[in-house]
Length: 446
Ligand code: PLP
Image (tube, rainbow, N blue to C red; front, side, top):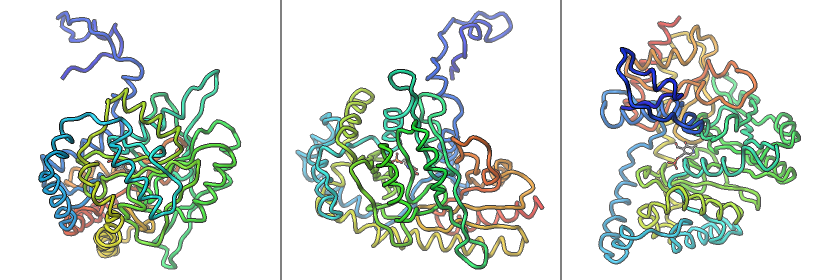
């Protein structure tokens, strides 16, 4: 594989031994930034290898959804129905559609949100994107970075640790600033903790006047935290008062896929940008994301999609159109995904108690309120969790070390070396075996 030299000078001297190499131009600064070894690249490489080439690896790492037979049966039925409607099927494959998304789908989605949630939104508030990862790349670079004159604006993450996939998305350096959470201990046994928003810190950061948007995932990846309704309302009021957008990433959340283990409601307001994804319903392969926000945002995303990719992928929109129109998409969480992932979360917690209990290791876990992850905290660990990640990889167990989820902070924090994320989305027996090996490794660390 060709690796671009960093400078033209490097390219002339490459190869050593006097063999002249053709002089190829170096990558641009943006090119270099986006091709360096990012955390998300490492994670997706690990995930891709484990899911395709190395099935023996115990995949407690990435955010791949589990295999949910009841949903697979629904996708197969919808695909058969689609194949039978030949005109729709042919046009789905044969046509570029408007970059905002398929007009019928966009209208149906806005209608669903109006009807079921009472949101005051129409088609102008909606933009389809090729997955929400792409939506975040567009949104962050649309809003933050250098502005006219010398002003620079940033994205504020009110509760760090936050989703690894945002970290490297800035076309410019230092796009993010983050606030550390406050820690509370909701259970008397001292094994379960919960992060909360430090509003004093958030307000202080907003007062600096250089924030374009506040962004958070809810439920949070990596912790499984669901920021409370009171916190969310306060954040919404604060951002409105400071004239900045509030971006709520609902990849695992509400109203679908609804992987939430305690009562919670979605939130919308005129300055709020909500993002939704089909991926965690079990459809990451269709690469379909949805953004609902002020019309100027939807319209900007439409323009970015046209420039970057002409149009969206049509398959996910056509496949799910019938259950968006009927509203069935909203039942899948409460009826199927909550029990499915809720049981897996409980099984993983039980395995932690069983295997870590006898080791004497000082462990705690973030309250598992939603998403696919447990966020573990080892306060007495003699090595950092990055070293632990490498040791576990040698034992064919993939986890994600805490440090990947910390960015935008002015200084390192202890949690980043003492915490790690495991996913409980895969088969419970495999997750249990992964946890057993984790406990063994921790016992060896002393
Ligand atoms: N947001 C969060 C919190 C995620 O965990 C993910 C994927 O794992 C995404 C966004 C992006 O998902 P997609 O691009 O598949 O919609």
